[in-house]
Image 1 (cartoon, rainbow, N blue to C red):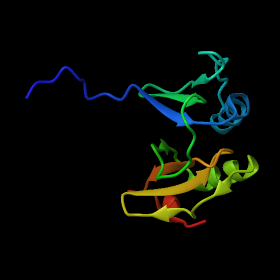
Image 2 (image 1 turned 90 degrees about the vertical axis):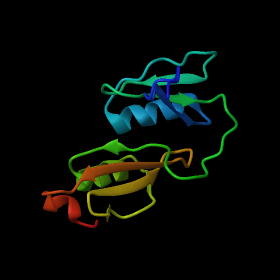
Image 3 (image 1 turned 180 degrees about the horizontal axis):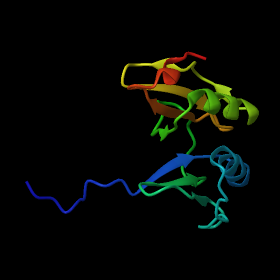
Image 4 (image 1 turned 90 degrees about the horizontal axis):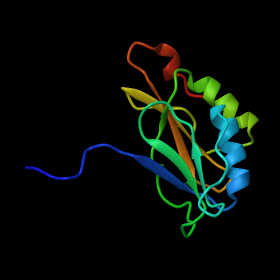
Length: 130
C-alpha cells in the first residue's frame, strides 16, 4: 500500500497555560535553553536530540487529562526522580518496572502527565522502585 504520509513523527505538542513559565520549567527539566516564544507569543520550541521535536503550545484549549503523550529515555530513574523533585514536580507514580522497561510519571506545572523510561534488560539498578 502506498501513502503520501511518511511514518515519521515531526513534532509533539504539549498544551500549556503560561508559555513563559512553562518554557522556563521545561528548560530546567531538560537542561536546555529554549527558544523565545513565536507565533504571537504562543509557541516555544524545546531543543531535542535527533528525532521528533517538542513544542509548548499556548494556543489550544487546555486540558491536562489523559495519559502521557510521549516519553523521554533516561539511564538512571533514581536520578530522574531526584531531579523532578528538585523542580517541585508532583510525582504521579513510583518507578514501575514492567519487564523490558521501567518508568516514572510526574506532572508539569500545568498538570500534564509526563513519563521517563529506562530500559531494564541487564540493568538491575533500573528495577529499583523508588
